Image (cartoon, rainbow over all chains, first blue to last red):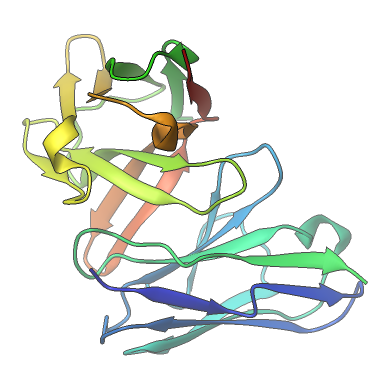
Length: 107
Length: 122
């Protein structure tokens, strides 16, 4: 299985901060990398697919980059509704594994 | 718009079989480029993909669960289902059904059900 490692596992930030989350794959996955946002008690929501493509309806303050093994999710100006847990997921080869998650909390 | 809704028992006894159904509304399950999946999340933990099915019946399983899992589709009812046999407490989780879109490099779970909590306990 391809292992997905996210860092940090949690972070504290303030509104309007720039936030960066990293995801590393245990082998090259090209750009087959997706990012999801999950709020407590809710289903995950797709934010970014194919490493850098913004899902329809997602605010432009979210962006993704990377290829191969190293990827980042950036929130350019953190908003109150962005406090949540973020997961990366590889779709390069099955089983389609997820990272362990990064919890973004209010400072 | 397309919606997915999970249904099934919230409590299952150890060693029994967990059975869940996902009903797809607002669109057809018989659509090319879309696959239908089950994903679970134990309390306080991360996400784990369980299985995927195409409307034609092609199936794909997580090897770690394959011996206990069956995924099936009923196109006449616009539903797909999950069966997980010989459950233990480790199978306690929120179970999500989701649509997987596959178009070129776009390969992601783009629509999710709200999830259903299943507890394994006697």
